[in-house]
Image 1 (cartoon, one colour):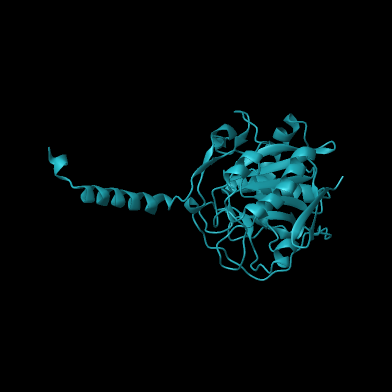
Image 2 (spheres, rainbow, N blue to C red):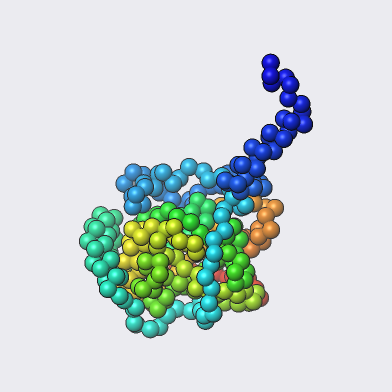
Length: 305
């Protein structure tokens, strides 16, 4: 009968304490919603994401922007644009060479099993929710999804990066030249996304050296396990070595489906995401790289081929 001795006020205090404990672990939920996964995401035990099969990544992800942890972003000034790279030089190191030699045989077998070739042009898509990175590879006249990798962590919340030190990972359309590879990274291996691009500079956004890198437990950008980064880096290096001059990276907050957009209609960045959705829809329809331009502060898209 002890429970009857608790007053309403005491009960509320208990609820508040429990709520604070949960918030300290998961953050403060503002508006949790269920978001669709990328429509391109294949399901099957045969698609291995290093230590996890893709099907383990697919259940709907509960979306709550405030639940995503902030991480420190190391920024320095750099000049980057949406333009393709023209330099034939590819940075290299003993570490990178060893990784490429180690991962080439297995990747070659996996690609050939799908009718693909190592060294073919690639395209990368990133989705903050559900924290995945897709690698698409050119086959004939279109790009097909080769593999999906889970992202260990990324910096910031849903929404674009605005300024140096805001702990945000970028969203938008970026082109990575060969010179953006960093084979001597402090985080195993990495590549620079190319922030700020033309769109970011239009809005006077600041910051640089926003990376995709290894060492999973690090505190910046989009962090992968070293094994995942090794595969991604090898695919990029081989594509550059075979003549690709720039690898497009499409960075999204989540799959920009009609259903997801309806759920996020009241979000402050809804208008920005509507603009990104034009590129998202164009690629999903054509499976072709995008010719991206910026006109009066808005992305504009055409297919390259």
